[in-house]
Structure formats: structure tokens, C-alpha cells
Length: 171
Image (cartoon, rainbow, N blue to C red; front, side, top):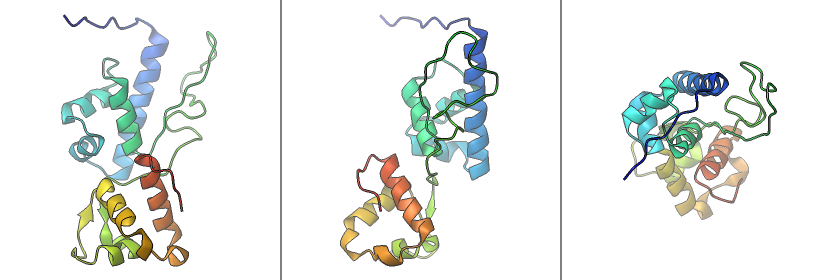
């Protein structure tokens, strides 16, 4: 029989979760991504994404991590002592902190990346791909990529895709 999770009645915890939720929402809006697209990219239901942005602590940590990864954010752990965490302060590795990872767009326009366009010659110019599809094309046609002439922006995209999907190699 499932048990009900008891939420700690800790104002500081609630405040930190609310701040993280605010940053998730802000980042999504800055990127111009809809809730539906973000939720789909993170592999969750739209309602779960809404619950994350509302700061509900009952959402699983895996869902939070997927949401952060889709937005190009990383959440880190660090030890704090009582009273050490200050309001509104991002620690190292927290979402919005100094260890932010490269952002992966939810939809990748093929025409914006010359190497991808050359590799995906069979798709029309205005087509968008999901991040996993783009990475699959880069990996499948790796031997045809001209790494030396790849633009820094496209190189960042490939590295971010590899980091997001756990690929060991970076370019």
C-alpha cells in the first residue's frame, strides 16, 4: 500500500524549492519553450511540468533533474550548516549558479547548423529535429563530419547534446 509522503514544514526548504521553481520557469521562458514542448523533451506529462514550476515538493527528484537537463541547467549538492544558506543565493552547481551547462534547445533547426544540414540532406531546410534525433544524425554520420570547419556554435551544440544524453566524447 503506498504511503503518503510527509512534507517537512521547513520554511527555508519551501523557499529554496520555490526559488528553484522560479528559475526553471524563467529559463524556459527565456528560451522561448512552451510547457508542452519542455515536458515532452523531459519525458514527463505537462501537468508534472506545471507542478515543478509551482514548486511542489512532492514531484520526484528524477522529474526535477530531467527538467533541469532539458533547460541546460545542473543541480549540485553541497553541505550547509544551519543558517548558512542565504536567501536568493545560488550555490555552486545549483540551477542558475556558476556551473551552468550548455543549453540544448528543445527543437533544433537544421538550417542553423551547416554540418547537420549536410548530414541530414534528406530533410527539408525548415525542418526542426528533437535533440535526440540531432545527436543520432551526428553519431550515425560521424565519419563524414568536417570537425575542423565546424562553427563554435555547432560544436557547442554537439557537446551539449553529448553531455545531455551521457555520451563520453566531446569535440
